[in-house]
Amino acid sequence: MTLRVDGRSGVPPYLQIAQQIRQAIVAGVLVPGDQLPTVKEMVAMVAVNPNTVFKSLRELEFEGLVEGRPGAGTFVLRRPPGPSASHHIKLRRSLERWVNQARLSGMDDRSIEGLVRQVMFDLDEREATA
Amino acid sequence: MTAATIETTGLGKRYGSTWALQDVTLTVPPGRISALVGANGAGKTTLLRMLAGVATPSAGTITVAGQHPADDVGFLRRISYVAQDMPLYGRWKVADQLKLGTELNEDFDDAGARERLRALSIPLDRKVAALSGGMRAQVALALALGKRPDVLLLDEPLAALDPLARRDFLSTVATAVVDRPLTVLLSSHLLPDLERICDHLIVLAGGRLVLADDIDHVLATHRVLTAAARDTTALERVHDVITIQRTPRQVTGVVRVGAAPLEPDWDVTEVSLEEIVLAYLGVAQSAGPPATAPASLTLLREER
View (cartoon, chains in turn brown, green):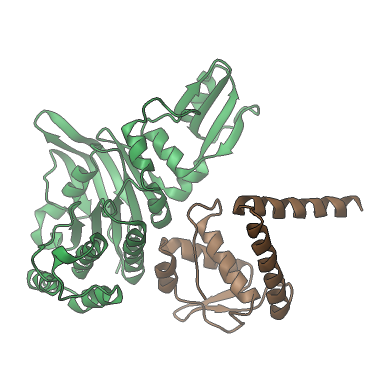
């Protein structure tokens, strides 16, 4: 598993890290019983304050996805609800194709993000009025 | 083993008739990474030099883990200080520099320092002067950490480094804090880097302490307030107004919001750490580009 933190994204670093770990569990990169990298390894990977990593882990513990075992480390407890790992990979691949197309046709990342949010918003609206 | 708390009371330093630093009463929390921020000449280096025991206070006191470090030379060993110019012997090989560290310090972690430099692919047989700025900074940091200090003081360690080297440097500092109880105080102009690595913020302006608080708490309590032009006396009575700007139609301020409720017609938005720091440094950020950018603003913005 690799981690990244984008300092310019509006999302707080601890949520970025939590989301990436969650994603790794959803995608089956980490399965129940697996040990997460140590706090030190994660701190070294992303160059953030150790407390930021602790905060991410607390977030995931609260969601019941991981469990800290004193003196042993943090372990994956279960997958969050959602599509199976293989289906998740398919969804991801089709999104990759779509993002690629959007970029090739000249959309910048901000407009892509904006469009995704807009589409989700419109779908919610449609569902609400249906 | 617990990390050391640094406390100062009424700390001041006078050069001739000028006070470089005045009346600083401050607690640097143990085991954390604190950012020391301020414009050039705000007193950052003066403060660090006094904490390191290389400058003598003109007023006030310093304690580290409850002791006065200046009273006890042995105690100074527990403090590592890396000055701004990364003082190393340019003609020496890295290995000789480490040997000096071993000779001069009772309990120098030579193996740890070598391992740290090896992991960063820094050749021990290279002369220090032949290393890149980033590598030199890592050698200075390895020496500082090799002392197994309780307190690590870093004066502008990032200034001369490219973004990648900055990241490696900060990563080494952050992992050192995971390894052992270590209190870090790091001065820099580069707020985005600091925000990532530090969890406590200390701001100096004109030789005085203007803010010292946990970064999470700073972000949670400060807001930008905007409303139609009005009298703000009532607001200023119950909340801490850091800066306020008025146009004929509008009033905007960076405010530390107190317990009292705000009048409902204020538009309240979250504010970035950079804007908060600039507010404390007395640099009002106008909507349009200022005719001449104030020096401190330029410094905080450079290299982003």
